[in-house]
Length: 547
Image 1 (cartoon, rainbow, N blue to C red):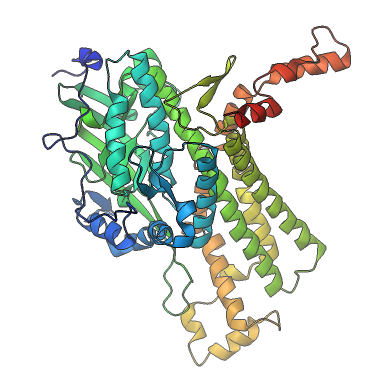
Image 2: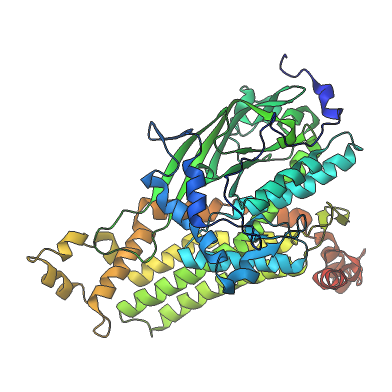
């Protein structure tokens, strides 16, 4: 079929059936716990080992359980380990609204504000455990976004499509098998001044290249896709607002990470391994270029195919959910930065000085303001979205969406603080971690005692512990991975400029201008402007409490 042919299929009712003819999410064959539909970390790793090899690293085709990927796998594995603990059941698991079974919260659709609160708190707790990103939030954020947008697209199409039913059936498998999902959103984008349909290379954005009776052929590349190389499923969503002429780029679907027609080129972010003086936890991360090389996707796995208005909405909604997750992970990173700065000050024996107290207070304020913004976004969550110039309108089948203003405020505030926090760490610690001797220098009898003598600073702390802190700070501030993590913290979930755009386009600035006009005695003033606006925080809180 020629490219672009078969557009009429868009309005043909496609049965949402996962069957043997059209591969659905693969079942890994493990007996599921009747009370807890969740895998163990070991079963997760075994599932990765069974997947087709389509991941390339440094010119070589590698297995998903290659030793280089194990630090990342162990990081995600923490989500399985912690969910298995009885004391974490309320935080890390939920009851599926589809099956009534207990499932991982990472596969759950938010049903109320309590679910939003628990997602934020679960994220913070797990990120504290691994000392950084827990790496599984992309799946929960993408599923919640697609769940809502697929419903709205079907509603607009007056029953001509079954995107939402397709997604519900996919989601049932995703939940029952406790799969790990990643979200592929960022396109390579080509010429940044051109929209998708105007690009000289049409594959600069992932697009529908061909529509067939049994599915679609997609082509293009997504990049910076965190943990795709260790994910069971890849959820693909648009990256930007789209025009009618960009309709072929309004596509959303899910495929297994080893799907035919998908190639992954991965970068792996591991810290320098230590042989003798090991860390308490060794984190790792990966990011992939996902190349869709004339990749066939059956209709049963397609959740959007040509609806440009909903393509843009999906891009924004995933970003919103992901920024809400950031209000859990960034406060956890703030907890780690605070502890590191306080320990560095203690090792240097300057922990009681005013300038250290000032910096610790700044870290605490940034951390807890970011968390507070996320908490407020959860508390004001509704089955609604905000439309500039209109206000809040019902959206989706009834699941809860966090408040956009507070999600964006928290993400922007903490994102902009990333390099300031690194600066404060560097200031308190000094330069010792940049030139700290290697492990074996502390084992060599010729140098060991001399190094312990000359690296000792605080007489009230074991010198071996002081050395471990400098090694850890070297990982944080001086390693390649440390630099990558800072860039991820700054840009992940959307660069600060994107949050600023969202905040200023959604916040009711006009009502505030009218209020000031009244106070100043200018014409056109209105002292009741804010009491009537839907974006007034007090009114939003009251509305939320009646849900």
